[in-house]
Image (cartoon, rainbow, N blue to C red; front, side, top):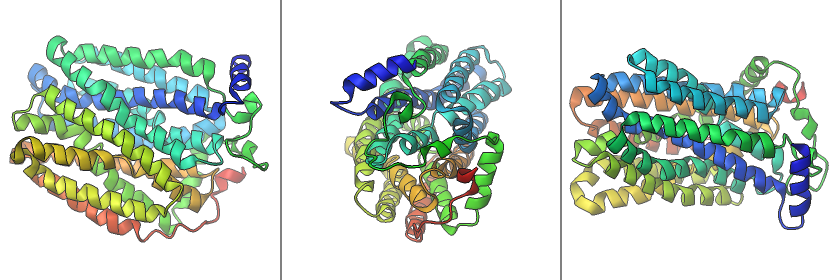
Length: 432
């Protein structure tokens, strides 16, 4: 593998850095993972019809997936420091492929918890924003915000590419065809990672992108086990006020994105007479807009105060969610207005949050600390999935859920202004 990547790096060095090839590879991995994470949103109605499971039962299984996806993050980042990025990512891709394929055999709710909850949740927890943060920290000295914006945008692009196709396949061939599709996509990414993903720039004779002086990059190699690395980082981070502000603001982010719109929007559209394909197409359009919005957010994060950016992102998202129940009553223009505002803002919060984590905890510790912040994001998402599912089952509408999520975002907008962003003593994980 080193010979192949070294040859490519040498031949392209005069045009662009191999760091951007690494970004492209991880973009594809994250895109595949995002497509798999989006799959349960098109399975809610088919599973209701085939097995007679209630929406709250299905939402519970999905929330287990979302929570594990977040909780795996810090341990995945620590495992990447201990064992290397490539073997950890390859393991995750295998879990995704096996878990989604096995789900075609499920007959009971606990089968869904084991496949989509345990196996897929663990796999997507590795192929997530913590992977992006680790790559950016290891490969970039400059343009970190732009690189993080591009990698974060892959989540939206995954929905853009897969959701309409998956909704159409569910309609014509059943939900099992979708499970086989995403299993094949995950398996296809395995040789790409195995052949073309170096552990660090020095493996192909390069420095980090934009690096002009020597940095202690070799300190990313850890000898402790991943559990100790992750919990050491957590213990140190919990003493810092900014960590809790980042954690709870990202909790709100998870509630309002993955947990609510990402999981319930297609079913919500069905309540208003919009087909699954129609709802998926709207989500895909928002994903296309977020590709632009999140990439631009990364560019802005390199240049402007990230706290101010987060204030506007959370505030505008809150207004959009409060508006959502009324958007369905305004014919075509209502959902168009919502899709534009929400789509541009969907996960634009990630690049400035990563920058703040780097500012506070330092480049080497930030990926693991950010993993714990992402855990807050996914706990928020799991909470929102359960709340919105049970409220829909009891009230027959998503209106109250939309208002709750919108108000939570407005609170988050105020919360982020309290972040100081000053460098704190780095967690002990970086000195082992």
